Length: 328
Image (cartoon, rainbow, N blue to C red; front, side, top):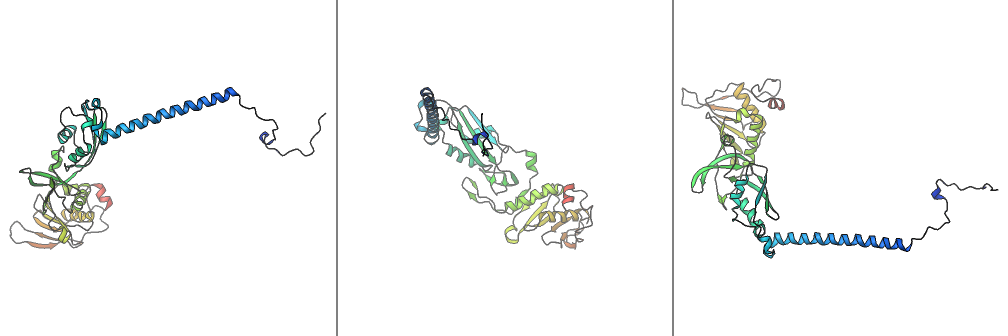
């Protein structure tokens, strides 16, 4: 007959109860199986390591020193060019720009020289080339977008060139001709030869800000712009825009372009500025002098424009886009 324990242990689980029985010792067969499994895993890991190391060495030889490649790899000709771009350039342009010899293999290509060849085209901002063996060359490029255009002597003749936001002048290919005809011309600039093309133009970031703001917020005004002059940008901090009707508009390059465009729209719409105006100066803040030439006179006169309202005019820009009204 069993007796109850006087002081039973306060065990919360059976794992807390002392176990005097020793665990069974692994048998000899079990030890051999464990050793065999460890050896197999080690052999598989070693094989994978050798394969990865060999592939890395082969790729390194292909990229750094193609002359060390075997003749079999050099005998495979290049069959395909793959182009990835964020712009308008196509594979036909890429083939012309690279100018690869016929039946050339990937092993014979110098990727650094090919990259430098692509970057001589101003439309290409960055370029990355990689080989996909055995016969594919992959090219990824980022393009510049034109913000204005100009005419210059290029390759022995006068032709139209484009200018990007960073001031790079380039010939341009693949753009929609209709869209390019809407870009304003640049004036008051000096082109300086540099390398295979021209040195970047200064102040184009400011010009790009003005044009993009006008195109997005006041497209009905932007459509009439024909020429943007940088002649007084460095000296007076002003940009001059000439419209198709002959009006000259002066912008303060250090001021808010949105505010100046709003004043311009107000003058042209509500203040009934006649179409014969020759100069509107927006660089003086709230005081906007307008010089105009009446059709029957040769003298240029000036008259002030009513003050630009700051509030209480919900219908201020009736012909403008709704977003332009709302932001103002």
